[in-house]
Length: 220
Length: 220
Image (cartoon, rainbow over the protein chains, first blue to last red):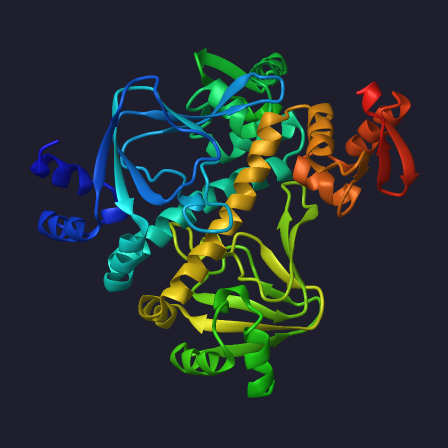
């Protein structure tokens, strides 16, 4: 990767928000960085590997996978460019990869030395606040997901609650997909589809097109 | 509260790990701190209140509560002395209290100015790493809880998985209580009790005393 190309990409990374190209050049000099390439399908890290650097995905997509006791593999999360890898596992008591990370496309990762990064955060408040924001945002997402499932125990409660919070002008889209929503709701995909069909049968929802429904509030 | 008493308490707070009493005295001078007392039953913060300071509970216990759509109130979490309040909501895009915080005993809270705290983290690497550890540990707990429920969709899977991970020498305790575990599993308490009874009926568990069971692996 050409230096200028790297600087351009880095100016889009939330962790370097507020830094201009010149400042990115300067700070990179202090961070003892490395760029590594991974091929499509390659396992970048295994669950349990030590997480000793600040790692950012520059290009390509990766997925976090886990094995169930029965040997099945399930995808926990997709990670897209400019994201920090496992931000909550760089510090704290568990500093290992929480999942297997598999590159789903040819991809590039940026590795920054952790001690140098700590020094840089102490010198530049923007970097410190950006890093705190990144870890906090991840924690906030996780909290919201847990509360949602905690407040809404049954699948019917989860779906109705999702509809109430996300409907726009009487229409509701199940985004990004039924499968992804089923993961968030911590239910199986068929159960979620069944619940949506049930709401259609009761006249609460009317299907417009795949994933999009009209909400008939008078039946709610 | 006498100054010496405050210093003693603060030396036990994870956020000040590695600081001796003299250093705590020095750093407190820079943090523009306040101590506030709350009575048993008092609402310390309402959900949605701005979270503009670093807040630590010095004594007493508080609970985080939320209201369901149907008006029921449920307890999300108990917060005990020396813990940071809502560590993932001090930075990041949502900087408001995620729940109502109610004091369940007469209690004391320490408030530290956020800008001064940022400065202090930039000057002292211990404080920076301690704060990153605190936020990260919270995120790690939330992640583990989500994965557990995600990997184990049915209540039977959740209970068997919990038993496999927590059994000791063929005995299993449901800790801290069936109610608390039901919250973690995101199921109702009666469903969890029913599942445990079912495992007893199948001969997989034999009740020893309340909450403690012998595991009969040959029946698993």
